[in-house]
Amino acid sequence: MSRHLRLALVQAAAQSLEDFAAGLRLRMKSPNAADLVVYPEAHLYSLGLDSMSEEEIRAAYAEPLDGPRGRFLAGLARELGIWLVPGTVLEQAEDGRVFNTAVVYDPDGELVASYRKIFTWRPYEPVDVGREFVVFDMPGYGRVGLSVCYDSWYPEVTRHLAWMGAELVVNVVQTPTTGRAQEVPLNVANAIVNQVWVASVNGASPTAHGRSLLVDPEGHVRAETVGMDEATLVSVVDFDRVAAARKFGTSGDSWPWDHFAEGDTPLELPLYNGRIDPATWRPAISPETPADLRPAGPLVHRRPASERTTSERTAS
Image 1 (cartoon, rainbow, N blue to C red):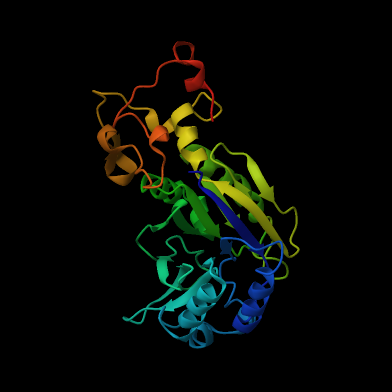
Image 2 (cartoon, rainbow, N blue to C red):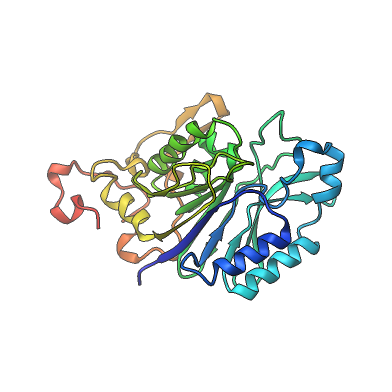
């Protein structure tokens, strides 16, 4: 069974909750309808931030995930029967801390995942920092990981999500500076070195610099916006291309997750006070991955291309 997901990345300026809901309802009646709809970081709380103090921002937008805003978003996903990532919200934790949190609702309106941004944009983002990587399963499709904006600058984030079995990494962004020019190749690189899909959606003018994109597991840009105007990217994510790239090689000649062979010793990583253990190097496998695309064993030494069959050398 093929695992094709219709994905919509909505590059839009910040909106009120009411305008967001009205626009999403219209979108789901148009050719831009999709199974998974993703909006930029801070999409629902970056209106008027330039004129508000930190205390005013928290008073206006911070609330628990199960508060009125969360119930409204859950109801909207259930009403439309979609997977919904409405960007990030300001999450008020029980202990009083406030996080920039990406949330995901399934077609039944359940909050299936929430990710507190780890690499906040200091000193311009005065919120608390998360300390957990988050992935979630989309039954019938595959496993998805979450990252937020500046996280893409730290390769450890996408690497961990891929190691946890993510086949698609959703990176929601609100970059209002020319730094977006660097984030574009960073997202391409994160896709290549981890052999995953990467969907990075930025806000539109006047709150952000656009240039949203979808990258496949071999680094090909499948869809992109070229400017800062509002736009919706609709494309299809084929989750099986992840396993195919890992089995047959990126461009047929690179297997970064298959590097280690039996008997290899751990690689010490002094920077992290840790190591890469060959026995645990491989990423988790999504329950949805077809049996014929699963690796043969925990450690497989890849034969040179000249020694492999035609079917082994050619990606499906």
